[in-house]
Amino acid sequence: MIGLGQMGKKIAEMFMQKDYEVTVWNRTKEKATVANNTKIAKDVEEAVAQSKVSIICVLDNIGVTEILTRIDSKNILTGKIIINFTTGTPGEVKRLESWLANLGASYLNGAIQVAPDQMGLKDTTILMGGNKEAFALCQDILAVLGGNIKFLGEHASASPAMDMATLSWVYGSYVGLMYGVAFCQKEGINLEDYRTIVGEIAPSFLEFYKHEINTIRLDNFNITQSPLSISVVASQRIADTVRSMGLDTDFTDVIASLLRKAKDKGYEQEEVAALIKVIAS
Image 1 (cartoon, rainbow, N blue to C red):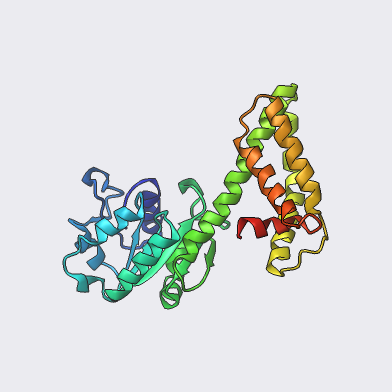
Image 2: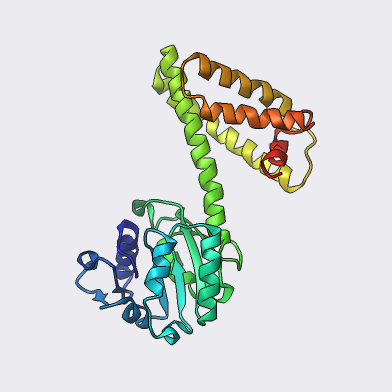
């Protein structure tokens, strides 16, 4: 285990609890303590040499590259499996994948979708991409970390790309949620009522989102659920209300602008999922 921040330490502890032999290494030596039965490597080269599989989880992929290039004997990486749980971009992961492949290592990239305390649960989701044979060999290892391991294919970059896709949805929804809180506060509405109603309508909207993704997947934008024209009007009404209430307008103006662009391009009488034609144009 390379990297002993909150997540790295949790991962190391989980493997020790399952009676794996665990070697750890951390750039800051003071953090290189997990439990008495772990072996602390003197450097990253020794750490990688100890095991067929090395897991790395540090701040960023610049750090991953800096750490792995410390290995002087490059043949140490030959035949090894490197699992990288560091958050990064698809471009960074492609470069790591190519570099490690040239050194004879098999590379898997993972994006952990939960906080450390939610690791190891049945619904813990981890997005994986990379070498297919390595993934097959590591399935028991990965199962220690969570019950919902998603292998997205042999391109390691699929993992950070899907991570960004899910986070885009999470952050967009969360900012919208905060605007809802602001509306309620401005109008003196009890936030407990808002909290309850959001919980009640969320399952229906999740089904609607899944339907809209399928609309795009099938490339059929005939109106089935919600015409884009309705959202053009609704998003502008929200943007105007935000402005009149003296709230920050950046987020709601962007939404209204995107939908106006879709209307201007002639998608008004298509399913609202036609917005993708503007975003991805």
